[in-house]
Amino acid sequence: AGNDHRLGAQEAPPAIISLYPGTGFEAHVDAIIKGAPLLGYKAEKASADPRASAAMPAVCGVEDRNRTAPFPFCGNRFEFRAVGSSQSCAFPIAVCNTIMASGMAALSSLIESGTSHRDAVAKLFKQNRHVIFTGNGYSSEWPAEAKRRGLPNLNTTPLALATLNSKKAKALFSEMGIFTPEECEARAEAM
Image (cartoon, rainbow, N blue to C red; front, side):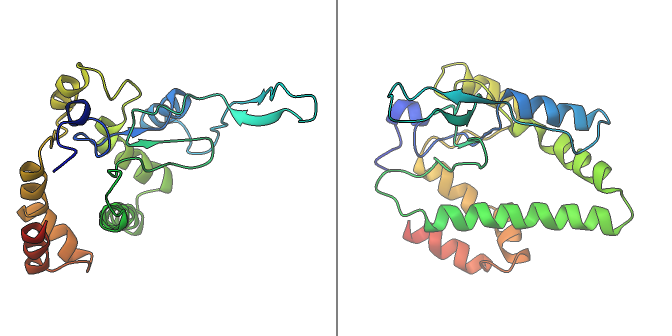
């Protein structure tokens, strides 16, 4: 609750969850949705000058790391920046892992039903494209854009807890074998 109004609830923990893959990978996702092959993305690299004669230049990605994004892609990994400074990351990571497991189950189901790997990935990218945001997550325009995309703006603790305690969330946690509906209710009550 102490972070409810930091930067309008857009700093850690952010009120709107989005994914920042960088503009290069965003373009690759859009190409896959339009029919391009899955493979072929190559992250641009450059050398960073350390400005010290005793150090060699380091190879690094050229994409902006976007410090305003809850999930930015940083060269070879996604970072998770959506946890408040005094909060344990255990429960948020459990939620992220549950969402990832659900997504992989959906992908597996498509492939096992006969959809090609490429088409299965393209379908999931298309269904979830609205989550990709390569802009400024602290801007005053972002909440309006997020609303247009159908993303929730959980800018208070009561709103976030109601979402945790929703039928959809309870069904997801139960289906994945993470929490029973009663455990979701207990966690929301304890928070």
